[in-house]
Image 1 (cartoon, rainbow, N blue to C red):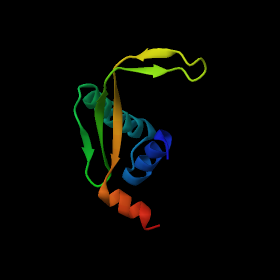
Image 2 (tube, helix red, strand yellow; image 1 turned 180 degrees about the vertical axis):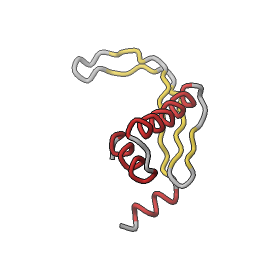
Image 3 (cartoon, one colour; image 1 turned 90 degrees about the vertical axis):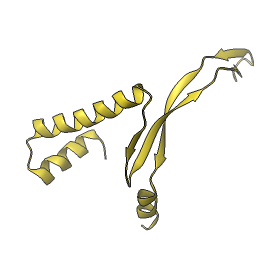
Length: 92
């Protein structure tokens, strides 16, 4: 399922117009992205939690040339599957 599929499902389930469903889905995704940008954790009970992990800088190696390169520190979102979702997927 992608964003368009989610919009369509919301439209059918709740009798919303396509524009209103797109607006609702957009608001949810925007709020989640904003929370992660602020370093907050997003938790959807039974589905997943998403949080930001900090990675320190390190010296890596270019596999093509073998030269050492500096890799800057970074922050990346990390997805952790919820127990209920894991069980539901595993039972199929």
